[in-house]
Length: 251
Image (cartoon, rainbow, N blue to C red; front, side, top):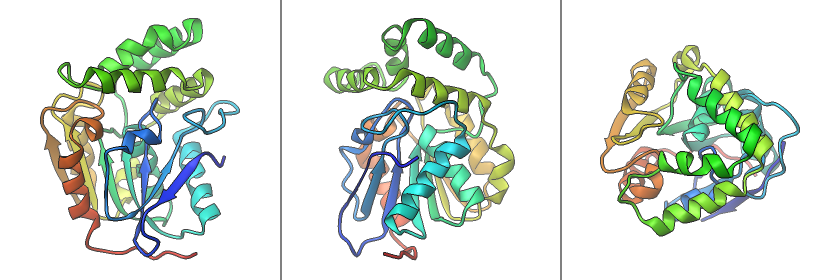
């Protein structure tokens, strides 16, 4: 399912794909200025991408990225994903040869407690996004973070297609990528946020412990959307991780 995407930056630079968190759009990366050719995309029903045509899995969402890479003629890329975007990245790195270096931010390979997803899905199906929005956005940022930015992300969340969001919630609830971690043989950086309640640092440590070639960083003073609260710190980590090797590209 080919969705909305943008490809910006120097044409001779390596391509870095940026995968968004659930409920966010390509605006997630507004503050990033990395020396790569940046490929941003919106998940199904998010931003300017068409709604999902039914239930989906993490594999389905990952295959959306494969379709996008094929569409653009890109054989191998760098990939950086936040939360749901990171789950997609893990699947891609484990099951395709398209990812040469990987960054996983504020994500998990599985959720031991699925009740949070059951409760959220129930509210969304019965009442829509508005009643759930404050609780969702409240887990994204620390309490002292900019109210104006929080309001902007809340407004974007309310524009997400609710059935598509529910389909993604179900995909996350059913996901278990733990067995796939041993298959990821590319250099990987795992970044957690100290105040992340949605995917606490111990879940990031579990990922890093299972990867053959990984480094783990924990960013302080940030919650789930650490890429928004601490963009400079994370930019330095990503630039160091991705800045050494150029992937093969065609087209």
